[in-house]
Image (tube, one colour):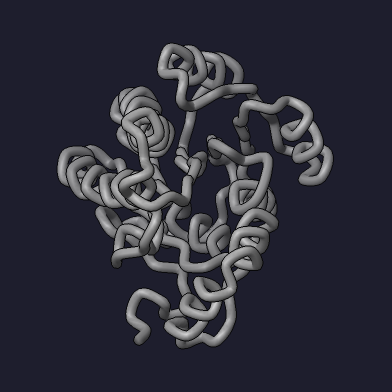
Length: 252
């Protein structure tokens, strides 16, 4: 094994890969040698991401929450690239409301995108990986799955469900050569998170106070952790949720 962290020759599908953490994951995967397909709802955003990343990156316009598109998405990628070695379920949405203000429609919308869609795509890609007896599936969880955070009842429920899904699928599939893991990002600096934190200074200070590292993370911190879980370097790692959080989940 020359470089166990290399992704040379691997094909990776990253949902929500046009912006934020997903975009940085795509960049780091390409740097590590992978051919990357990113998905998202907005074609212009995906085109801009492709131009920024450069070679070995492709896109498919896809709304993960529309489960009628899921099987077709996988078929398109397999027809063009022949295989999927790595699936990163990165696409997700959030909503900040007090629990009593969350409607049934609000709750269902978050669960549909963050959990139902993740399962549907993982199931379809999993069928292919089971045939090949090889693959790495990476879910994106959250600190909201580790401890209580106010005003994110639907989001926290979806991300807690992700870790349950990881454990079950790892138990079912690891014997066939598939590894299933999650990454739980802490407070990561993205354009969206900066806007959210700056509009809620108390929340920002609370998050910082319980982060032993003393600063928020960067998208590439999560991205390189994903490269590790996608690579042969983590060949005996399955069923875990890896916090990339500067110690936030154990801080006081």
